[in-house]
Structures are given as structure tokens and as C-alpha cells.
Image (cartoon, rainbow, N blue to C red; front, side):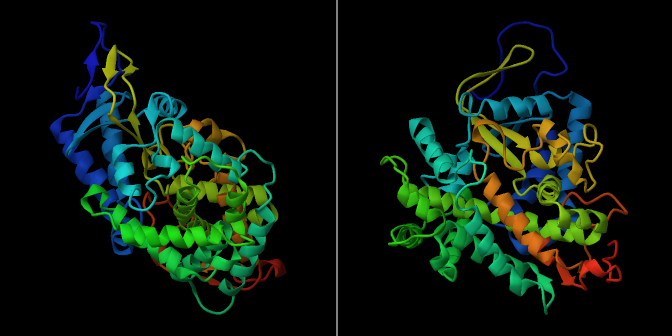
Length: 451
């Protein structure tokens, strides 16, 4: 089957699904899908990111979805994209259902996601189905100490961050290139241990293969490069005294189906979205001195600032699932197995009809329960497939920002991140530039302007 069917003659309901017209499908493809694909879904293309931010292309897609919801109601919309049918969700309740039923009626191993990630992590948990997925998920949670209040590796993580943060503050202007290079050294140390700090070939291999993943199944698999990447990763796991998460990998029992080195590659890849959010958080705090002052004094608030940056500009523009069985929807409609289901994060995170803070920097929503109550706000996904690495990512970014916030910062590029206007829906982290100014403690320091 290729689309909805009705199981009975029940009356139509406003929350039930509808089929998009060909014109709506074209608008969604041109104004929503194409800008996202052009920027790169696995690794960003800086020039295209800059153009997308200048045009604020995420706002285009949001306007199309707003128009669909206005005309057709909040029910999901079945859209025919080139070569594929997808159910686009417009309701927060539907988004919660899909996230909550992942592993039952929906799978993270979406066809397109599998095609992209299989270039560099073909056995990663995110694109695994069946019994093997449960084994790999348990392994991930065990190594990452997902449910521990204070995992063993947190102190080593803090030490690595503090060492790498030192060179970023004094002297030269802070650019994305400098910030990203420091963050990559941190990630290599956290994942593979201190011995991998300067192994830039690891990152180079990963990013070459991620670039291939941007093309999904259209790019050939480069097995030689992937084998080299896995061999280098395995060497760090096999060290007599491995460090970082590699130490826990070596100490954790695993069945043959787990393929530990593939799970390590997933952490190495997934961690790379973190510096984007952290760098934009620093830009936001440079333009919001009151929030910056509170972030310096309150670690929980600083983490909330990082989460708020990810809400404003989600590094995962859409959460995608495929149905694993027939799913039933209001109005007596049934969606067949194998259909893509799309949760447009950049739309839900900025839904002004539901969120009074949609286009403002308001970290407080992560502390007073408002953001947690909205399941459609999911920077680390939610439900059974929620990211087990959430805590280590937030710890890393917050620790790095805490080190940098011992000074005030001034945005020296043309970014508009201040409170004087609604924040743009699309942000270009690659061209953001900042300069450290005098320490904030003396009361007479140079204050960041409102850009």
C-alpha cells in the first residue's frame, strides 16, 4: 500500500490526516526540504549555511507548515516527495505519540537515515532494528552510565575541557574554526582518551564519510576509508590503558551483535552537533548580559542556556521515523508499514501558537518545566530512543562555556542575536565571530552590545 486507507465510514474529524495537494507538496519540497538538504543533513556545508541564514530559509518552511495547519487543521499530512511518501506531523500530540511508540510502531532506522549513516556507522544503534537494537541500546546506556547521577568519566571530561579552553580566550578573535578545532580535541579525548587528542586523521576520516552521507544512497560507499576509521578507533580501545569512553568500552561485556567499535563511531559522530549549539550559546550570552551573569553563577542555568540554543536552532532539523506496522489515526485512517513519519523540529520548537517564548532566548523554560512538558521540543529526542549521551554533551558544553565566561564577550560579526527583535529561525554559526573583553567582575568592564 502507498497511502492512507479508511477502515470505516466514520465522519471526518478536524484532527484526522489529510493528503497534501501537489502544490503543497511542491512548496514543502522547495521551501522546506531542499534548503535542508543543501545545507547538509549529516555534515554542514558552510557556504550554503551562510546563504540559508541570510535568507532565513527555516522561516520559509515554518510558514508553509503554518499555512497547511491553518487550512487543513492540526492533523498529519501525507506528502508525496520525489520517490517517497512521508507523513508530516503538525500536532504536538501526534509528535509525542510517535516519540513514545518508537521501538513499537515506529523505528529510528528510517530508510533515508540508514542510507546516510551507513557510510560511516553501518552497525550504529540508531539505524539498527530488531533484537540487535535492544542489545546495542543496552550497551550504549551501560558505557555512558545513562542513569547514573555522576558517571565516572565526568571528572576526566571536565579536566579535558578546561585544558583545551585555555587558549581560546586571550589574544585573537574567536572564530568558529578555532572553537570547533578545540571542541574536536575535547571530543577525541572524551571518546578515545587523551592519546587521541592530536589524531586529526580520525576526525578527517569521519568527516569525509559524513560528507558522503549527505548524498544518501547516491554516493558510493568508500569501504577503505571506513575500514581505516574503524581500525584507528579500535587501536585506542585496545590500548593497555585506554582512556575516555574507550576505557569503559573495553571493560563492558558485549555480544557479537553489539559491534562496540560501531557504537563508538556513533558517539564520535553524534557529539559533533554539540559545538554548534555551544558556540551559538556563547553568541547569545554575549548579547544578553543579564542571562550571562546568571549563567556564570549557576551551572544548571548555563545548561539551560545550551538547551535553549538547541531549541532555537535545532541541529537536527527533523526527527524521522519509519512505521514498522500499520498505524491507526483519527477518523478511521490507517497508515501502512514502511511509511516515513516526519517531526519538523524547527517548526515545533518555534511554534508561536503554543509557545509564548517561541522566538526569544528564554533559558528559564528549561528550569520551570515548560519546555520539558512540550514533547515536541526534543533537542535530544525523547521516549525510548532519547539520546543516552545527553548528559555528557551538556556537561561538556556547559563546562567549556563556564571557562569562557570568566570574561565578557562581544559579537564582532553582523549576527543579530540580541533581545531587541525576534531571533531569526536560521543561524549561521560558521561566520559568527566574538572577542573577549575585560572581566565582568569589576563593574566597569566593556559590555557586549545588543546586536
